[in-house]
Amino acid sequence: MRHFLSLKDFTKNEILEMITLAQKIKSEAKAKNFVPYMEKQTLGMIFEKSSTRTRVSFETGIYQLGGIGLFLSSNDIQLGRGEPMKDTARVISRMVDMVMIRTFEQSQLEEFAKYSKVPVINGLTDSFHPVQVMTDYLTMLEFGIQNPIVAYVGDGNNMTHSWLMLAAKLGFELRIATPKGYECDKKIVAEALQIAKESGAKISFGTDPKTAVEGSNVVTTDTWVSMGQEDEKEERMKAFDGYIVDEYLMSLAQKDAIFLHCLPAYRDYEVSEVIFEKHADEIFTEAENRLHAQKGIMVWLDQQRDK
Image (cartoon, rainbow, N blue to C red):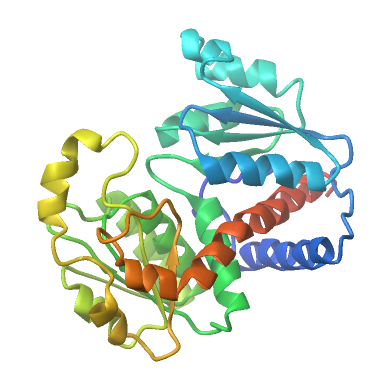
């Protein structure tokens, strides 16, 4: 049995197998051919952090695969009343076929997976957001990006860490620009760089967005103030001055470069209104692809149980 907690747990071929499955399932869905790959299976969806895209995409996804999704907020289950994560895992995993968790600490997710009898998917933690970068890679392929040169501009957060793992595993170039004091986690960086030695990935770090973006064919960013950081907003606005992806910054990228944002986006903070609207087709295709990428991941995990 396999879990989907971080991309570091998978080989390049396994990641590409999930992407290929997602492409196939998306193509079938567009033709209104909803194949019941997970007929009558139940996906338990545990949300300690709320989300628009994660809930809609997973709940719709399991339904289109022939199963059903159960939305479980911390107010709905004993986890929110102090029950240990391992006990919640022991109970829920005896009643459902797969679990998706959107929570805070990666260690909590890993503890749940340790005691779970069914596959567990990381819907987001403070350390990683792997379903999102799988979505981003699927979107890049759809827009014709075969040899990515990715520039990430912004906070060294769970999205940046996930980009690090994706680049390291698949072997493409990733340039990260973060303000001083907002760099990526050193342990995760070390792990990614070790993996990159084997894959040939070219990963660089700096504080200048212009250096990162120049000549890239994918530019991406994330909100500067994530959920739970609202009290840091004023301080962060000052630290991230100059990190907005605007017309000038995008002009440094390749002429046909695409722009991605995992949403929600705050216009004229991390991205300008002009750039957001100019690249809206890419951004909202990316948003839709959460549905398809996650279906690919769920089906792949389910298939591993039959091997």
